[in-house]
Image 1 (cartoon, rainbow, N blue to C red):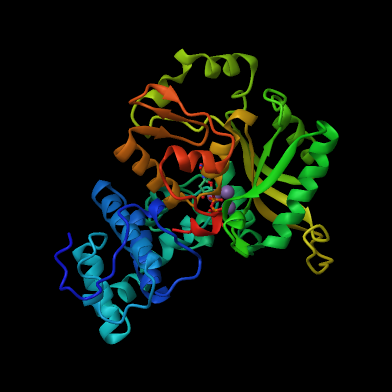
Image 2 (cartoon, rainbow, N blue to C red):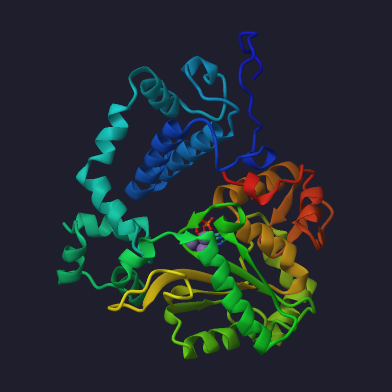
Length: 383
Ligand code: TTP
Ligand code: MN
Ligand code: MN
Ligand code: MN
């Protein structure tokens, strides 16, 4: 609001997508505390807590975006990005080194158990809370419970829990992408693939491997994902899988999408635009040699989470931005596009509601241009 004390008080852009946010930043301890509060609010659930979670997220991304280490809360008290609660926590940590509230949550039975459950692939905050309310606290409780029934996805997540907790290094992700590239070279020569998600943003270790797949000739990608997954299955690489929007690229869906009447979902307000990209997500099992892990005679393979996403060439740039993320970066990009420009942005297209037209893009730069934003490299999108 500009009513600062005349000193060089810190400034931040309104939206995260307008600024640079890198993995390295100056306020690790504060960010860790705010992220814990965000995570706790999500685990509590309900509309009010979700609002609080967003406020904590906004505070933590603000702290990541600051150009220096904060030593006194006065340095940031005029930033609109920080609510009273966040400011109070930050002030407490700056004066005595820790926050009572944060430490109390960290050590609480509720947080420890729900966080543990939430870390299982397939278990969201609602389910984690439900199990907690039923008195469950540990994995053994889940396995022995007679009152709950795990879904196949959750069972697979629980069975592979330890291996899925092992970080996926950039080198391992690259080797998984190379293996996928070899397969699509056989299925449909000319098909391309690249690593997206955290690894593209410069993370040295991720929780999974995200691979974007496309063919430069529009339409050729139809049916590709099913063939790829069939081949991977034959090789014994897939332990658990879910196929999403698998008909998204059939002739009928293709026509519907190309037909302007079929674009109604993106012509309205944001949030309505669905992600129409074909995707396979699941738990894969790779030979330890493929991941360059030391041999283990009891267990020759290791489980890893993998996301395979197929995009038609015409949507490639939007898919690339969307699947590079991160999630909060996307959220701010979509909010900014809608609020400031009345553009509805999704992972497959953008629609200008004032001009009533689609915005075709062949590069990420095209999209930043439409949005009147300075281009940000993937590693600058780590909100
Ligand atoms: P994730 O793999 O969930 O996250 P990440 O790669 O950023 O981090 P990590 O290293 O922990 O794996 O998702 C990748 C990106 O894809 C994410 O930044 C946002 C986007 N995304 C979607 O657009 N839609 C989705 O349904 C999901 C799950 C992710
Ligand atoms: Mn990822
Ligand atoms: Mn994920
Ligand atoms: Mn992923």
